[in-house]
Image 1 (tube, rainbow, N blue to C red):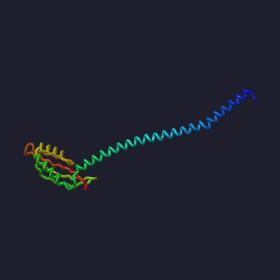
Image 2 (tube, rainbow, N blue to C red):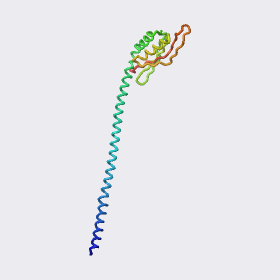
Image 3 (cartoon, rainbow, N blue to C red):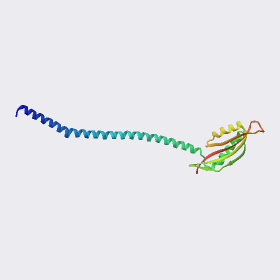
Image 4 (cartoon, one colour):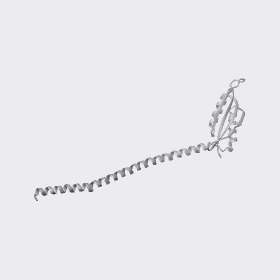
Length: 176
């Protein structure tokens, strides 16, 4: 064997050794490394999603607290149904203090809703327009939830500036 053949044989042996090392060691290691990298990226994506979800959960918790506070304020403005006479007295006193004379006050059928009761009251009052305006402003200041609907003002032809009104006012109560 000559030196050139020996070098050629050694070169082929080194090339074969390099190929087999690549094929059986480096290529599987790279494939395993790529799998691990993909798994790590998936875990990182799940962690990012968990961070977003936990931030949303914190935000939802804050919103839930705000809603609970709003419900508490709303419920504090709903008296128990046993206090209907007190509210009616307050409304009548407000009307009289503002110069309105009540003609009729009639309670209508109660309407039960989810968690509260609506008590409509048909009222007829006489007085001047400024007295009505002051009456409505005072009703807004009540710490109870009320709603006026079907308001009808008619001018009295006998006396200048005097009007008659008929309206339905709803008062809301807690459902016991």
